[in-house]
Image (cartoon, rainbow, N blue to C red; front, top):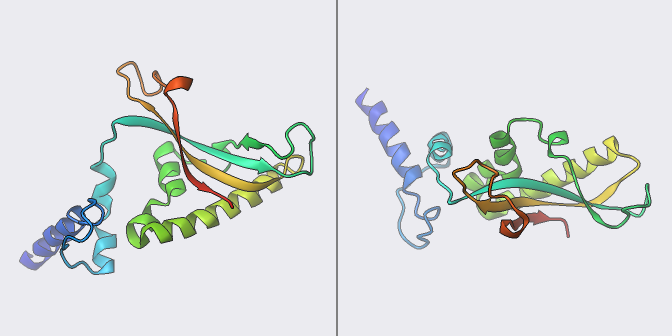
Length: 167
């Protein structure tokens, strides 16, 4: 039992004090095997704080085919068609949080390329009258308000953060 307790404590310390994720590049971290790091990532979901609120956005660039009114323009795509789960789960999937935690920025970027391909394919199946050829997504950040989550989401306060855009 003592060994199991030591493993649990050590695993949590490895994940919590990962100097790369804390922005302390070059500082030493506790040695953590890949499998141990993966097993102890769950506390991170419950231990974060942001000084702003955000909504996800998903857009597709219309091809030159199909309906004429928005050909070649970026259009908003309904998030629920691609991510029908609750908002935190949709965020975790679209942000590719697990890929980022386990594989870093390159792994996250590779996941985003795959996500964009699946979004494009699904949209073009669901909306043959409005096919898209490129995808981009990210977050719209806005101030926190005591009046409610989206109370301060007004056009002048929104800052868009682009996470991924097809070349």
